[in-house]
Image 1 (cartoon, rainbow, N blue to C red):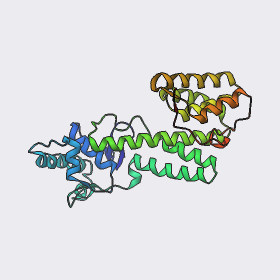
Image 2: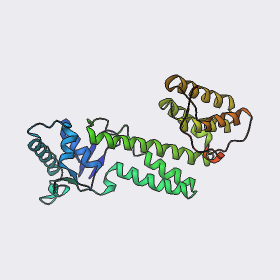
Image 3: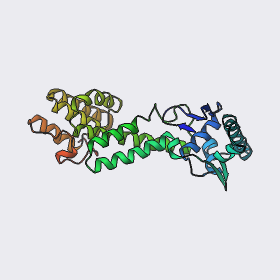
Image 4: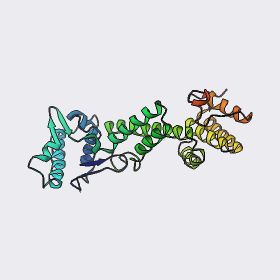
Length: 275
């Protein structure tokens, strides 16, 4: 099987889609996929579908949805031995499990590559770190489960993955900066800061890349725009680290090409209140 959740939901067995069209069965499949190999309890599934106010028929309706998913699996796996669908979507004590190998789910592959990329970064191998983290990011086809309704449990998983994506992206940019890829990063970072106008780390990397490419005025303009946005929207000043970066550029001091971390400045956050 091949299951994709990093974008629109897609799931196929033997090349045939098993994704149902109805909203709630899609939620069940998505939650089971994000917990592939682990039991998802009946109460968790019910809460995902109906919240805390369960209909009287919740248990029966949930079983109907599970049967529908198994029917889709059985159709896709018609060339497999009898009972295969029940082994793939298995009933366990108190719940259900989608018995898949981690490599079959794109979110699990993203996590695996991210761990390897972080390890390579920690070991100082920036080339491997950039490649591995880039491969992890390449698994994404859009917002997580963009075409699936998110109940309580899916919302938690979606938030985790989206935050993890930003962390992996930021670390890959740091690796690329340390590899001297400043010119190549400017376009990407300009777009990213547009999408994340309050993210200090991404702005800091853009400022460093611009400065190292001889574009100090543009680097200072990026800082000023970020400051204006923080003050106007949050009533906050940029962090002390970013302010020191600005002063270094104003004084024409050297700024390490891998950003604040390498310049002896801990990597950002916690802007100061204005006034």
